Length: 272
Image (cartoon, rainbow, N blue to C red; front, top):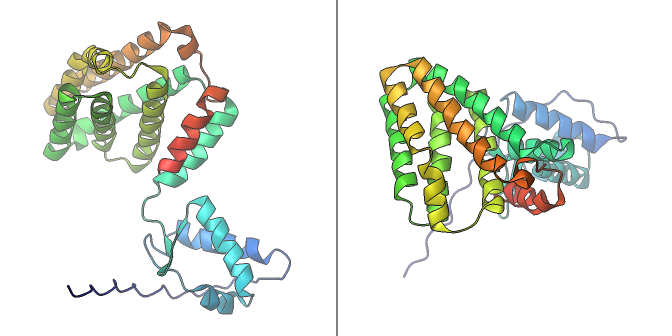
Protein backbone atom coordinates (compact mmCIF):
# COMPACT_ATOMS: atom_id res chain seq x y z
CA UNK A 1 0.00 0.00 0.00
CA UNK A 2 1.60 3.32 -1.01
CA UNK A 3 2.48 5.69 1.82
CA UNK A 4 0.43 8.88 1.95
CA UNK A 5 2.27 12.11 1.49
CA UNK A 6 2.71 14.21 4.63
CA UNK A 7 0.34 17.12 4.85
CA UNK A 8 1.95 20.28 3.52
CA UNK A 9 2.56 22.97 6.10
CA UNK A 10 0.91 26.34 5.45
CA UNK A 11 3.33 29.21 4.93
CA UNK A 12 4.33 31.10 8.05
CA UNK A 13 3.03 34.61 8.55
CA UNK A 14 5.41 37.41 7.68
CA UNK A 15 6.27 39.21 10.89
CA UNK A 16 7.40 42.80 10.98
CA UNK A 17 7.74 44.40 14.39
CA UNK A 18 8.95 47.74 15.66
CA UNK A 19 9.40 46.54 19.24
CA UNK A 20 12.75 47.41 20.72
CA UNK A 21 14.07 44.33 22.47
CA UNK A 22 16.73 44.80 25.09
CA UNK A 23 18.62 41.95 26.69
CA UNK A 24 16.94 42.63 30.01
CA UNK A 25 13.43 41.26 29.80
CA UNK A 26 13.78 40.28 26.13
CA UNK A 27 11.49 37.28 26.48
CA UNK A 28 8.79 39.37 28.18
CA UNK A 29 8.96 41.96 25.39
CA UNK A 30 8.54 39.29 22.71
CA UNK A 31 5.66 37.70 24.63
CA UNK A 32 3.81 41.00 24.90
CA UNK A 33 4.49 41.94 21.29
CA UNK A 34 3.23 38.64 19.90
CA UNK A 35 0.29 38.61 22.33
CA UNK A 36 -0.73 42.03 21.09
CA UNK A 37 -0.41 41.05 17.42
CA UNK A 38 -2.51 37.93 18.01
CA UNK A 39 -5.14 39.68 20.14
CA UNK A 40 -5.66 42.47 17.62
CA UNK A 41 -5.85 40.10 14.67
CA UNK A 42 -2.64 41.32 13.06
CA UNK A 43 -1.69 37.65 13.23
CA UNK A 44 -4.88 35.74 12.49
CA UNK A 45 -6.17 32.69 14.32
CA UNK A 46 -4.79 29.44 12.93
CA UNK A 47 -1.74 31.10 11.37
CA UNK A 48 1.61 29.34 11.46
CA UNK A 49 4.24 31.47 13.15
CA UNK A 50 7.79 31.86 11.82
CA UNK A 51 10.34 29.39 13.09
CA UNK A 52 12.24 30.12 16.27
CA UNK A 53 15.31 30.90 14.18
CA UNK A 54 13.37 33.36 12.01
CA UNK A 55 11.79 35.01 15.06
CA UNK A 56 15.23 35.30 16.63
CA UNK A 57 16.37 37.16 13.52
CA UNK A 58 13.34 39.47 13.60
CA UNK A 59 13.79 40.35 17.28
CA UNK A 60 17.61 40.20 17.20
CA UNK A 61 17.80 37.78 20.10
CA UNK A 62 18.98 34.21 20.59
CA UNK A 63 16.79 31.24 19.61
CA UNK A 64 16.71 30.19 23.28
CA UNK A 65 15.08 33.51 24.20
CA UNK A 66 12.44 33.00 21.51
CA UNK A 67 11.90 29.43 22.75
CA UNK A 68 11.24 30.75 26.25
CA UNK A 69 8.69 33.22 24.86
CA UNK A 70 6.92 30.57 22.79
CA UNK A 71 6.60 28.29 25.81
CA UNK A 72 4.98 31.11 27.76
CA UNK A 73 2.53 31.83 24.92
CA UNK A 74 1.65 28.13 24.80
CA UNK A 75 0.96 28.10 28.55
CA UNK A 76 -1.24 31.17 28.09
CA UNK A 77 -3.23 29.20 25.51
CA UNK A 78 -2.41 31.53 22.63
CA UNK A 79 -0.06 29.27 20.73
CA UNK A 80 -0.16 25.57 19.95
CA UNK A 81 3.11 23.78 19.22
CA UNK A 82 2.72 20.95 16.71
CA UNK A 83 5.77 18.74 16.68
CA UNK A 84 7.24 18.48 13.21
CA UNK A 85 5.02 21.24 11.88
CA UNK A 86 5.71 24.38 13.90
CA UNK A 87 3.89 26.80 16.18
CA UNK A 88 0.37 27.97 15.36
CA UNK A 89 -1.93 30.60 16.76
CA UNK A 90 -4.90 28.81 18.33
CA UNK A 91 -8.16 28.87 16.39
CA UNK A 92 -10.47 28.19 19.34
CA UNK A 93 -10.18 30.71 22.17
CA UNK A 94 -12.24 28.60 24.58
CA UNK A 95 -9.16 27.46 26.46
CA UNK A 96 -8.13 31.04 27.14
CA UNK A 97 -11.44 31.77 28.81
CA UNK A 98 -11.69 28.45 30.61
CA UNK A 99 -8.26 28.59 32.18
CA UNK A 100 -8.41 32.25 33.22
CA UNK A 101 -11.99 32.36 34.48
CA UNK A 102 -11.91 28.99 36.22
CA UNK A 103 -8.78 30.00 38.12
CA UNK A 104 -10.22 33.41 39.01
CA UNK A 105 -13.52 31.93 40.26
CA UNK A 106 -11.62 29.34 42.25
CA UNK A 107 -9.38 31.96 43.88
CA UNK A 108 -12.36 34.17 44.71
CA UNK A 109 -14.24 31.28 46.28
CA UNK A 110 -17.33 31.73 44.09
CA UNK A 111 -20.22 29.50 45.18
CA UNK A 112 -22.19 27.06 43.05
CA UNK A 113 -25.31 29.14 43.75
CA UNK A 114 -23.61 32.26 42.37
CA UNK A 115 -22.63 30.41 39.19
CA UNK A 116 -26.23 29.31 38.62
CA UNK A 117 -27.46 32.85 39.26
CA UNK A 118 -25.02 34.34 36.76
CA UNK A 119 -25.91 31.78 34.09
CA UNK A 120 -29.58 32.58 34.64
CA UNK A 121 -28.96 36.27 34.00
CA UNK A 122 -26.94 35.50 30.89
CA UNK A 123 -29.65 33.22 29.53
CA UNK A 124 -32.36 35.76 30.24
CA UNK A 125 -30.41 38.23 28.13
CA UNK A 126 -29.82 35.55 25.50
CA UNK A 127 -33.50 34.82 24.95
CA UNK A 128 -34.34 38.53 24.73
CA UNK A 129 -31.79 38.89 21.92
CA UNK A 130 -32.86 35.61 20.36
CA UNK A 131 -36.39 36.92 19.84
CA UNK A 132 -35.07 39.15 17.06
CA UNK A 133 -31.95 37.25 16.04
CA UNK A 134 -32.64 33.52 16.25
CA UNK A 135 -32.75 31.71 12.92
CA UNK A 136 -34.66 28.62 11.90
CA UNK A 137 -31.42 26.68 12.34
CA UNK A 138 -31.04 28.04 15.89
CA UNK A 139 -34.51 26.82 16.83
CA UNK A 140 -33.77 23.46 15.25
CA UNK A 141 -30.53 23.19 17.25
CA UNK A 142 -32.50 23.78 20.46
CA UNK A 143 -35.09 21.21 19.42
CA UNK A 144 -32.43 18.63 18.60
CA UNK A 145 -30.60 19.25 21.86
CA UNK A 146 -33.83 18.87 23.83
CA UNK A 147 -34.43 15.54 22.09
CA UNK A 148 -30.95 14.43 23.17
CA UNK A 149 -31.80 15.22 26.79
CA UNK A 150 -35.08 13.29 26.63
CA UNK A 151 -33.63 10.35 24.72
CA UNK A 152 -30.36 10.04 26.63
CA UNK A 153 -29.77 6.45 27.72
CA UNK A 154 -27.05 7.16 30.27
CA UNK A 155 -25.95 10.12 32.42
CA UNK A 156 -23.32 11.31 29.96
CA UNK A 157 -25.71 11.32 27.01
CA UNK A 158 -28.31 13.19 29.06
CA UNK A 159 -25.80 15.76 30.29
CA UNK A 160 -24.35 16.21 26.80
CA UNK A 161 -27.88 17.06 25.71
CA UNK A 162 -28.21 19.62 28.51
CA UNK A 163 -24.88 21.20 27.56
CA UNK A 164 -25.95 21.32 23.92
CA UNK A 165 -29.31 22.87 24.82
CA UNK A 166 -27.87 25.65 26.99
CA UNK A 167 -25.03 26.30 24.55
CA UNK A 168 -27.49 26.50 21.66
CA UNK A 169 -29.62 28.88 23.70
CA UNK A 170 -26.69 31.25 24.10
CA UNK A 171 -25.72 30.83 20.45
CA UNK A 172 -29.21 31.87 19.34
CA UNK A 173 -28.49 35.37 20.68
CA UNK A 174 -25.68 35.84 18.15
CA UNK A 175 -23.72 37.87 20.69
CA UNK A 176 -20.04 36.76 20.83
CA UNK A 177 -19.24 38.04 24.33
CA UNK A 178 -22.38 36.52 25.81
CA UNK A 179 -21.55 33.22 24.11
CA UNK A 180 -18.04 33.15 25.58
CA UNK A 181 -19.25 33.46 29.17
CA UNK A 182 -22.29 31.23 28.73
CA UNK A 183 -20.27 28.40 27.23
CA UNK A 184 -17.75 28.58 30.07
CA UNK A 185 -20.40 28.55 32.81
CA UNK A 186 -22.33 25.70 31.17
CA UNK A 187 -19.20 23.55 30.93
CA UNK A 188 -18.26 24.41 34.52
CA UNK A 189 -21.69 23.51 35.90
CA UNK A 190 -21.67 20.29 33.92
CA UNK A 191 -18.46 19.25 35.66
CA UNK A 192 -19.70 20.36 39.07
CA UNK A 193 -23.03 18.54 38.82
CA UNK A 194 -21.32 15.32 37.78
CA UNK A 195 -19.25 15.62 40.95
CA UNK A 196 -22.18 16.51 43.22
CA UNK A 197 -24.93 14.14 42.08
CA UNK A 198 -25.34 10.35 41.78
CA UNK A 199 -24.25 8.65 38.53
CA UNK A 200 -27.50 6.71 38.08
CA UNK A 201 -29.37 7.16 34.80
CA UNK A 202 -32.76 7.20 36.51
CA UNK A 203 -31.64 10.09 38.72
CA UNK A 204 -30.64 12.23 35.73
CA UNK A 205 -33.74 11.33 33.75
CA UNK A 206 -35.87 12.47 36.67
CA UNK A 207 -33.80 15.60 37.27
CA UNK A 208 -33.86 16.81 33.68
CA UNK A 209 -37.48 15.74 33.32
CA UNK A 210 -38.45 18.22 36.04
CA UNK A 211 -37.56 21.09 33.70
CA UNK A 212 -38.72 19.42 30.49
CA UNK A 213 -41.72 21.74 30.23
CA UNK A 214 -39.50 24.79 30.67
CA UNK A 215 -37.14 23.67 27.88
CA UNK A 216 -40.11 23.16 25.56
CA UNK A 217 -41.52 26.58 26.54
CA UNK A 218 -38.21 28.29 25.82
CA UNK A 219 -38.16 26.81 22.31
CA UNK A 220 -41.80 27.69 21.68
CA UNK A 221 -41.38 31.25 22.98
CA UNK A 222 -38.35 31.92 20.77
CA UNK A 223 -40.22 30.50 17.77
CA UNK A 224 -43.23 32.70 18.57
CA UNK A 225 -40.98 35.70 19.29
CA UNK A 226 -42.55 36.08 22.74
CA UNK A 227 -39.86 37.68 24.90
CA UNK A 228 -41.88 37.71 28.13
CA UNK A 229 -42.68 34.01 27.87
CA UNK A 230 -39.07 33.18 27.01
CA UNK A 231 -37.66 35.08 29.99
CA UNK A 232 -40.25 33.53 32.32
CA UNK A 233 -39.37 30.01 31.14
CA UNK A 234 -35.63 30.64 31.59
CA UNK A 235 -36.18 32.00 35.10
CA UNK A 236 -38.23 28.96 36.09
CA UNK A 237 -35.67 26.62 34.52
CA UNK A 238 -32.89 28.04 36.68
CA UNK A 239 -35.08 28.30 39.77
CA UNK A 240 -35.42 24.53 39.56
CA UNK A 241 -31.62 24.25 39.46
CA UNK A 242 -31.41 26.35 42.63
CA UNK A 243 -34.09 24.26 44.34
CA UNK A 244 -32.30 21.00 43.64
CA UNK A 245 -29.11 22.49 45.08
CA UNK A 246 -30.94 23.76 48.15
CA UNK A 247 -32.09 20.23 48.96
CA UNK A 248 -28.44 19.55 49.70
CA UNK A 249 -27.06 22.38 51.86
CA UNK A 250 -23.49 21.23 51.32
CA UNK A 251 -23.89 21.41 47.55
CA UNK A 252 -25.66 24.76 47.52
CA UNK A 253 -23.08 26.43 49.74
CA UNK A 254 -20.12 24.73 48.09
CA UNK A 255 -17.43 27.05 46.78
CA UNK A 256 -14.95 26.50 43.99
CA UNK A 257 -12.15 27.17 46.47
CA UNK A 258 -13.18 24.01 48.34
CA UNK A 259 -10.61 21.25 48.07
CA UNK A 260 -13.27 18.90 46.69
CA UNK A 261 -13.42 20.91 43.46
CA UNK A 262 -9.68 21.12 42.82
CA UNK A 263 -9.71 18.03 40.60
CA UNK A 264 -12.90 19.23 38.86
CA UNK A 265 -11.30 22.54 37.86
CA UNK A 266 -8.08 20.87 36.79
CA UNK A 267 -9.97 18.39 34.61
CA UNK A 268 -12.05 21.18 33.05
CA UNK A 269 -8.97 23.17 32.07
CA UNK A 270 -7.10 20.09 30.84
CA UNK A 271 -10.02 19.00 28.66
CA UNK A 272 -10.02 22.13 26.51
